[in-house]
Image (cartoon, rainbow, N blue to C red):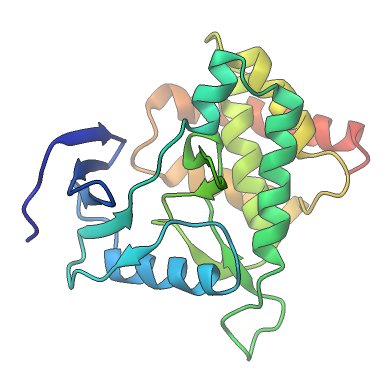
Length: 225
């Protein structure tokens, strides 16, 4: 197990610690992830030019050493007004399209692509060198429609809630689903099922899924998706 420095931040299932000026350690608290597999998929997409942090192998399922990034998350930039909702949604859509342009890892399944499955504003860092996508713990290979569905449902859950970010989340969703959009009906249905089964979801978040799915469908229909 790697020694830890100062705690830099915590998410739903992991903590991030300082190593030095160039590297950080992300440690999975719950033991659900596989750091080696996550690092491998990050290195694969990075090798095809996709914007992710560099990683170093640790030999651990729970510890992942990552390049230390500077800059706000897209979520922080949206809250602070440095990025508008239309721009933020378009950025997310562009990152999804760019990811799904990376050649798949399974030659026997030519339709499969690497899917992030958790691409939302808090998982995009706005560095001086451009956006970087973080937290690949849910990544797998599959059809791109599922990736679009997951991002859309995540935004829609916020948009149908009663918190301050509800209105901008709706605008983000509209920009995400503007043409060209890779959302599919099957992808949306599977995304809702997976969100409902996600053990990190609160009861309230699960309760919002029906309204969230309906909002995604209305928004996609309005955009011609």
